[in-house]
Amino acid sequence: MLSLMEIGVYGTGRFGSFWAEQLARHGPERNTIVLTYNRSERPVPAGCDSVPLERLGACECVMLCVAISAVDEALEALAPHVRPGTVVMDTCSVKIRPVDAMLARVPPSSPVIGTHPMFGPDSAAHGIEGLPFVYAPVRAPASVAARWRAFFSSLGLRVMEMTPDAHDREAAMTQGVTHFLGRVLADMELDASDMATVGYRKLLEVVEQTCNDPYQLFVDLQRHNPYTSQMRVRLQESLTRMMKLLES
Amino acid sequence: MLSLMEIGVYGTGRFGSFWAEQLARHGPERNTIVLTYNRSERPVPAGCDSVPLERLGACECVMLCVAISAVDEALEALAPHVRPGTVVMDTCSVKIRPVDAMLARVPPSSPVIGTHPMFGPDSAAHGIEGLPFVYAPVRAPASVAARWRAFFSSLGLRVMEMTPDAHDREAAMTQGVTHFLGRVLADMELDASDMATVGYRKLLEVVEQTCNDPYQLFVDLQRHNPYTSQMRVRLQESLTRMMKLLES
Image (cartoon, rainbow over all chains, first blue to last red; front, side, top):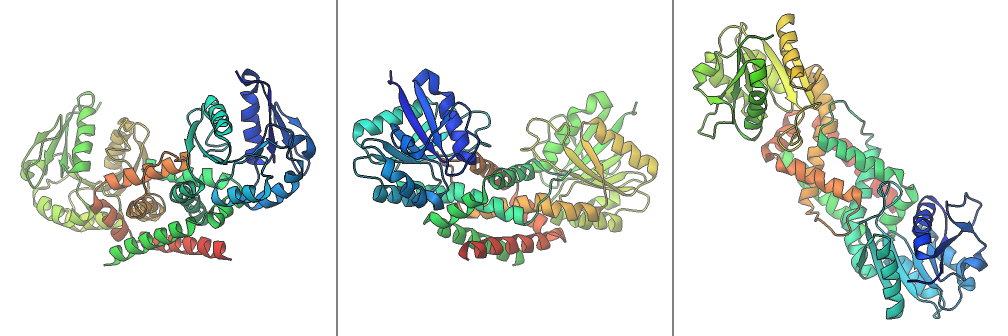
């Protein structure tokens, strides 16, 4: 049994509030309390308590739920309040960049773990059970890494331990290509159609789901993952190859 | 009640054999007999009888189930055997071109109806109920058009009456873009991934489904629908726009 523990969630935007509520929902059976902080005023996620930054830094763990491009700013605000031993995690969709920022800005007395919950409010609408959760304990004693790994597993998540580099490489060719194509297809203004085939309906679902995420996520995924530019080049190459093939 | 009627299916490839079996399955309750013909020897679809071309042309209706690029050749073989009154239909994924070919080659004593069952063996794996079926009675007395429309509706299909031009225009931006992207993504060699998001899994399903269809269907869809080249230009424009946006 875990003793009573407090998890801090920094940032209660679209993903942060969803995530805080997920943690809080599983709270009672795990003696977990979820405290949240947001720079500006926002509704407090269900089952959570809003606290000032000083209080957040005293939690056993603080999870950053901010845009990739806002990680530096968030760390700058949070770092002075992080108590020794408090584990700092991010939840960004790229890993190398935010993990490097945490390693640079979080005091050495605090463990650092990168995470990427590979889902959001839409794709986890029917629950998080079995969904992939990337876990990169880049600066953490083995016992701390094991403890939090067990915690996320206990939520029903499929915890995948990997390095930030391995994550970014694979995410570029999976989540990265999906979000890029979703925005490209939205730009084409594809419409629902009475004669839609099953395949076309799936394509529209990809558009809907990716475009329902914040635009900033799309831009950050493409700009801050060092492997997405290669993915886009490969996509363009394949597109050109198929175009030429049809012309020949 | 319909009286006993014979439907001929010309071509028992991947789609033709699937389609002949669908028709035969609904046969008994509708007093329908399905006769099939294939240029080369092939297994006879379940519930059907294989007949020579002369016999096929004597059916009440003959449905061409051949590749778009093989329609001319099929009509050349079939036309001399078509009895006055026999309704000739195609089932191609583009409509202007095969309908024009039928109008030119089918004797004037026979009605001509273009159709496009917007599904195949994969997407109709769980049945054809409610799936879209495009219906273009381009040269048919009103009573004939109504009769066959009622027949296809009675199979549970969602019959959509439209002109070949309207079909090709809309199909280019739905089925056409889906099959094109499916092949582009296959060319990129996207892989299954343990960290696949829900959206990425949908994208892989699009690849799997489109690439499971014959390569000839993909090529024909792109080459013989006069609107698909515009679709590909729009796709390239949107891709370029998103690329530039990320670089700025």
